[in-house]
Image (tube, rainbow, N blue to C red; front, side, top):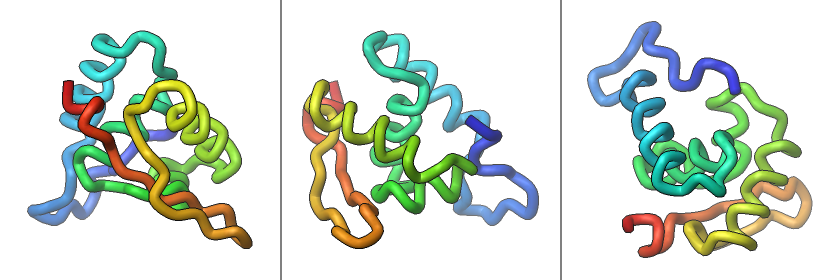
Length: 103
């Protein structure tokens, strides 16, 4: 994963990369079955940074196909996020955290 959410030219309401990574580490510690990418997807959804696969891929400098693979595994195996919409042409998948992700 490339350096997410660079702080260069940071606006006052822009997320802090160090804080984001801390939240991902906490999420992975409490959910050891998650991959680092899945942890980042979950935190980005909780923090309202990205709630669709294309936006997440762009913000984190990742291939959309990798994000889709990780997101699909996260949806199908954990119940921590749910798919809300999918574009059949681009495969952009919109998702949101479930109440299980707050535990």
